[in-house]
Amino acid sequence: MHRFGFTLAAALLCASTVHAAALDQFKTFVGSTKAARGEFTQTLTKNVDGAKKTSAPSTGTFLFARPGKFIWQYQKPYEQLLQADGEQLYIYDKDLNQVTVKKLGDALGSSPAAILFGSNDLEKNFTLSEAGTRDGLEWLKAVPKAKDTSFEQIAIGLKNGQPEAMELRDNFGQTSLLSFRKFEKNPALSATSFKFAMPKGADVVNQ
Image (cartoon, rainbow, N blue to C red):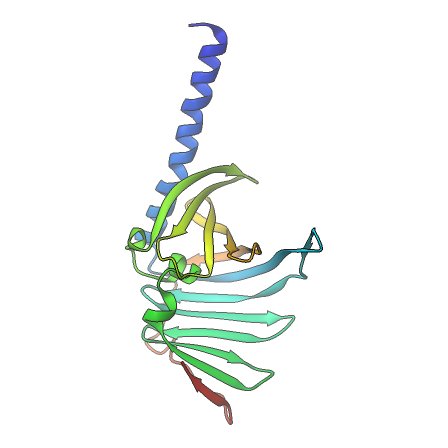
């Protein structure tokens, strides 16, 4: 075999090994992680007058237990809470003192939250494929099978068997980037960890 051919074959073999690692890591993570908690940073990039503009970062904490129980708490620059108890999703806007309540099954489906917080049967709602290596992470692409979702695709960046980043591309060409840190797998949780406490005097909107 010519040296070029050998080098190309070696590169392809290496690429296949790297790519396979992303899907393997993710399936292992989903299968072995019943609950987790940590912190996140989120930015939003969109096109404004032909130029890309990135928002100031939002930060907060998360806690989840499969399937369908989670607390996603934005702390800065504005406080907002998304909480699910396995049956209902509560979205609390502190500034408005308003709680929106949705059935979790309808709200989760092919949403980005289903990637982290849903059941193990992800391939029912998503087409999963390898997305290569970038920024020191192995990336996996998840495309919703449903046509009425607001997201075109979701990418998950993994390292050492757990997600470190997610990219969410919506139908308007906007991309949200989530970075995770202080990720703790399978912490001890109480039976009431995900019970929503209705804020005093809050307006409730049922959807």
